[in-house]
Length: 287
Ligand SMILES: Cc1cc2nc3c(=O)[nH]c(=O)nc-3n(C[C@H](O)[C@H](O)[C@H](O)COP(=O)(O)O)c2cc1C
Image (tube, rainbow, N blue to C red; front, top):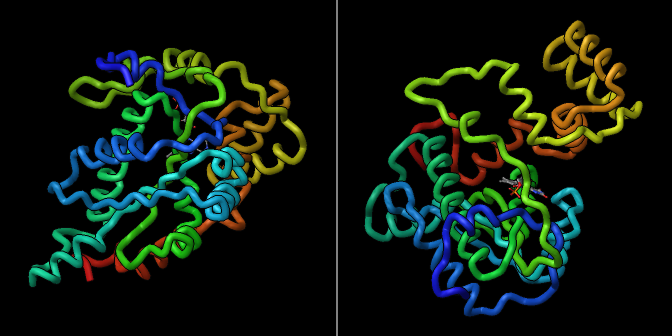
């Protein structure tokens, strides 16, 4: 590892990796990464998180399957499942004869997500400094039940996201980003005009390359009707016919994400999952 790290260079060079060598990550490297993860700030200083390290091939195969069959998850040496963990806090509270849970369940959930995210990104940057690359993955939310069972997560432990970690096979391209003036507002929120915003969006997404085949068009139209009504959907589909391709948003939100609608957890299903985990979003405090 380099003696001195140029942080801005590290930030600029970081990129998501989707092709990993099978080479194992030495334990002493993992120990440094976990130290980094645990150094992150956390709400109330409670460190309401757990990280479950998965190196077992069968488990990695399952995680790849539930992640829309993204094969690199099974190929990489390690996957880390970041969890919101109220279980440890609750055990300590009960041991001390103290109450547990200071707020609405939704607040607890939010604080846990934030803690897990900051911790993960701290680990990601440390991993970059070690020559490793990573890929986040949110599919554990859609499959929270199965992941929970696979990892033997107790009550009050909720899988938040996964991080695939390993040595890259090759150096992938850096993804394009919006310039910061699209993101940053001064004093109050102000909409950028669409004339200014859209060229930034096109610059970021590149030339759309999503073919407008019949299946995709039918799927997109269905989602558009549901969200905006028939008139809007008809106009949008006319535009698709004229341009001859789907834009990035049309593809991702119209076709890709809704493609697992039948298998993904519904909003009510997720609320039920959380209730079973002891986190009832309709209740104050914790049980
Ligand atoms: C919560 C979250 C979930 C993600 N899920 C996936 C995923 O399932 N598959 C994947 O290839 N990339 C996934 N990514 C990576 C993003 O696609 C990537 O960060 C984005 O395209 C920007 O690229 P960059 O990280 O190289 O800057 C995810 C990222 C985040 C933060």
